[in-house]
Image 1 (cartoon, rainbow, N blue to C red):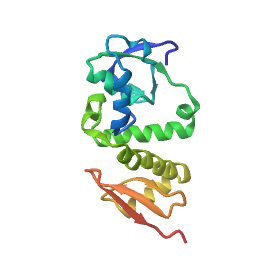
Image 2 (cartoon, one colour; image 1 turned 180 degrees about the vertical axis):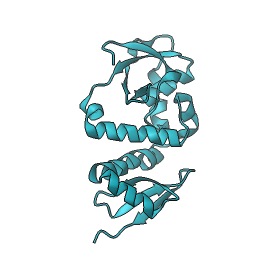
Image 3 (cartoon, one colour; image 1 turned 120 degrees about the vertical axis):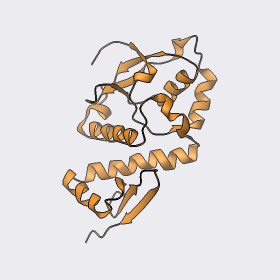
Length: 182
């Protein structure tokens, strides 16, 4: 943990996101100036116990900076409740696992994962909501039991009432599995 703004190599930062929104990137390109980072707000990072600082937000800004050849960017240590709470820790650590599953190690690995605004809503925002449902409404033992329903797939989420589980294969193809809650 650190208190002030720190400059860190973009490629050394861990990620907590597996997609980038093309529209966000285009909007950042309109104001971004690689030779003057004075309007580039420090990006929030946190150490989730994996021995590296991980972006908790600002993946799009980091990617644009990287594409423009910026090596080091300003970061601040994220102490927001949404990150440091038990739920936040659980969700961000889950995001880090997703990055590992898709071999996303640093910001340059997101280049092939830029998607439209609509796809971003479906593939990222909805995915995070499904993960929230699963992680906050079940125990680890329950999730282990759910995993046994489809051991060939990776469980990543559920509906709010836990009647549908969401799985994916190694390629990222998505599957739904209806369960009986009676």
